[in-house]
Image (cartoon, rainbow, N blue to C red):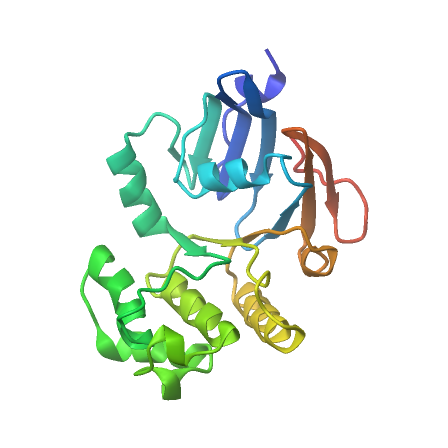
Length: 239
């Protein structure tokens, strides 16, 4: 048994992943992965197709549970929770940004943001308008997704992810479907959020996106191959 399993989560971490494995029959999607994330840190997770980064993202985002190991979000253990309990944690504590946007096609940008409010607490149109204004889309609030560009749809997705003030912002290939101009706009928004103290995890295959992060974890064959800071030195948070 590794030392990571024996050591308790650190109280000053927003996320502790401790000796986590995910097994699908004969396939080990993750093997004894350990890492930590501090409040306000920006972490990039990289790796080739099949490396386990999507599986790890799903576990961090409370969309799945590990087969073995522990996951602790802001002091709360997630690995033993039921699907309904994980849904509640995801709704309360995690903001998800998807590559495919996942906007409701028949709802306006404003209504798409307000849906997240509805499932969290109370709907507040003014607060939702402010969230859209924060990503430069207040004047597009009444537009349907089909009337928005890809970059605008991604910014609606960011506003929706932020409306409930999550403890952790988790982005899956947030610029994967965007042109260079819109990619720059989205990364500028993430930088602004980071300066304001947001904790961000970005799953990406693009080195130019990962380069914005404080730290980069590379997965290979379901294992952590490297964990380095922006200056290239090894991270002290490596599991």
